[in-house]
Image (tube, rainbow, N blue to C red; front, top):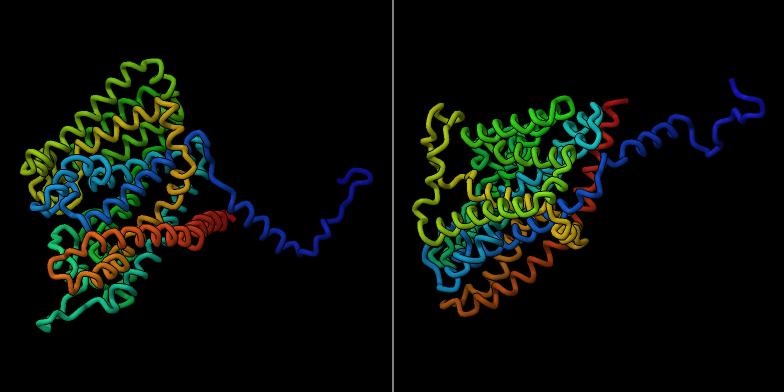
Length: 457
């Protein structure tokens, strides 16, 4: 019953009840997931990885001898010097993709750790596929349109080759994938998009990845698969003792290393998140500052030493580590299918990542560095940069360069053409990433929230 004098009328805003209810539903649906501002430095790390990723894409295309693990084994002296020094730190492909998978797992569990309710869990599980699928689909539609039209060129001998092959031949680039798979029709493109989120192993050999410039789209498949490894593991966190979680995670991580699974990285990241959110990791690390710093530096030093050693001194041992794993997805025994062209799960990368995050979770100074607004800005747009940068470098950049060097027999104009390509592709990638963020990425996130809200009505 209404109290005396209470106004029983609905608000007279001119909006029918159903429309008012729908508008309120949309408002509720687009509310943010649980968020901890103290973890924003992780978004800055994403921004740093975005910069490193662009450097790798560009340098592998234009200065391949300066890139770690490059197929260009013979290169000018300055490129070899860069390969054996800075490339290990700043544009190392295996370190970059391992860090991306680790960071994704470190971040996607945070909403549930902040609010361990069934609604937050279900929301994370439902929205993850939409969040990744729509931007990836948009990217592959662009790939389909761009690389099925005007892709082939004629040589002076009358042969038909792709303009990527023309560029690779002219610049003696053996590192870049120049013979991309062509998605011949819309159905093939649709199937490729579908398979990105369907395949469970051999990610590198799916059609979408083979058609994608730089052939790095397999990372999306790995992220999607490992998301659900994290989701199915994190649900036990609110209901188990902390000591058992520590021992259980250690066993899980060692087993994942042994069976050569990306869970090796993702469960380590989940453990870091659990320690930070539920066990006050920063205070414990700061209370043992010297010990923590020593362990972190030893881990970083060991990882970087191995990277330098495999690149500079013993490249013949670069892939030997894989022989120490079992292969349950392939043979059921020792891993004998040593495919050196496939992405590798490497101990050196793992040690560097663990050492870095020990320092990051301990140090207020490092966290302030990665909370830099510029890095956070880049981090929020990093998915768009990742999807677009390879396309832009392989279209705008290479075509600009070819126009300048086709008649340049001795390639004397190549350095200037490379500088022009770098400036133009960097600017266009930044601008395209901004457009992609506002028109594709951000609306996709909002749509995923609305879709989950609709499922609950």
